[in-house]
Length: 382
Image (cartoon, rainbow, N blue to C red; front, top):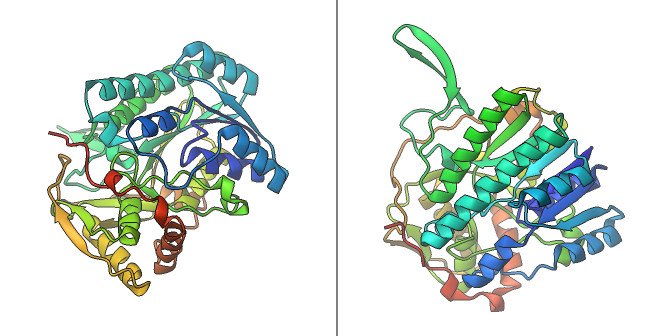
């Protein structure tokens, strides 16, 4: 297939590009380096320096023989989106091109406005480019489990059937996002659903949980191909923060009660999920939704896992609860359905002690590059 990846410089975008190329697809990536600029502006750079997209593509070709075409463009500008879609003529568009940080979106008016405009404009432009230029193209859109919030019922896979006063109908599962960033993802889903049912687009929306991992078959070919690894409070996931804190000798900072439950998955499984979705496209006029995770546990359980492995490596890990900078339920019911991708063939990689130890070893090699001031919360919801 001809695959266009929007947001190809990201933690997920670059490994996805290499995975598709290694599988024999014709890959183009587009990015405007928004995340890099925000990370620099907020003192939130990745632990391991990564080359530019063009440099990464050159290294990847040298070590693998596979080409990735690179386009630097602002996809929130319609003419740039339309130009790249015309040039790439894609069979599938993988859409990652959004400001991905909940804390950044809650930092202040300008950050919220930037998140809102970028995320919605890119999605809107992508929809119209497909509708007007490549109407048979399949959009694979990265959503987030954070769209659902933490309802007191089982989280179905995107859709729910409701019976009311003796009648039944099928609706998008109710959304209750906990940040402005997650709210933009809810609005993405609503936009996609409108254009799917109005113009017959084909869309797969992947509701993804937090991703962890640094290793993929392609990233392991050369150090220059490593994914972005952020450990700060703005771009770093809780997994990354805890691992870096363990290495740096900082107590693992559990926000509040620590009962927050989420669904996690390994980076390798993200690549599996996205390619499975792309190679088994949705029908025309279908908004297909998968919940993309492989296991669930609380923040406290995650901290205990990291402590166990870290202590086994003589890191003497401590755990400390701190006031929660976010507005969220700290004890709640959480039971998401996530069977669709397994039915397509997903073979999960779980968060074993060996996986955590491997990540800790990679971080230990860069221990001197850790900037501890980036780890503690710098953004509060209130």
